[in-house]
Image (cartoon, rainbow, N blue to C red; front, top):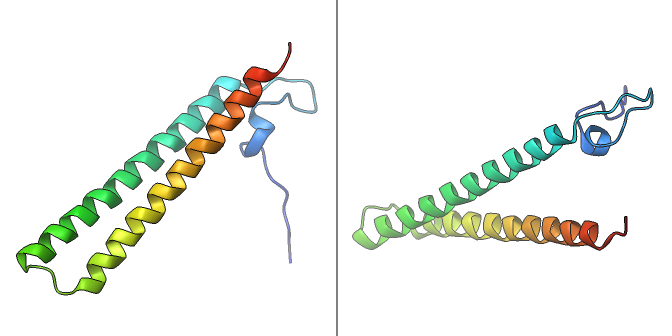
Amino acid sequence: MDIKGLQGGYGIGQVLPAADGRATKPAAAAEDASKFLGELVNKVNDLQLNADREIQELSTGESKGLHEVMLAVEKSGIAFQFLTQVRNKALEAYQEIMRMQV
């Protein structure tokens, strides 16, 4: 079994200077983080819209079953909870950085 370490482009390696002294671009790391958060918000929004559509179809009689609606609603709820936790962790990290003395 071949186990490989994390390559450049993952984690804090993008923000910290490389071992050979060349600095990586922190702007790229920030751009990747904002892209990740944007995609996460869009996916959660899509799940919530899907759950709303399923609820409407159930109320009008178009839906096949209650279990499909409940699955969509639970997926939406779990995704929103995950998004909330990611936001909380990002906010905590920001507050910790702001408390650092220069």
